[in-house]
Image (cartoon, rainbow, N blue to C red; front, side, top):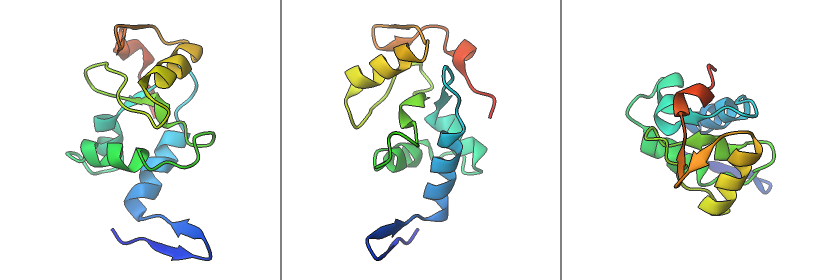
Length: 111
């Protein structure tokens, strides 16, 4: 997973590109889990690595990484803090109580 920099532009690894591309496709009001992302891009077992990639996201507007959550329903981490992540998820229409998404299954994206 080698990265190169060319004229101040970061070139992503294939793995990172797949994570970001799938994350971009998650519609408002829907979420995926870190585990689901790993499975959907053909790398089951790399959920933690997916989280590491999303933690490096520099384009929060185009890549809504706040829509990736824990399999347990917990909101998980976010560059802007978990409070901000909860605010964004609530704004998208999700219901959250005590840091967990209520009825996670109803909000899972099919993509």
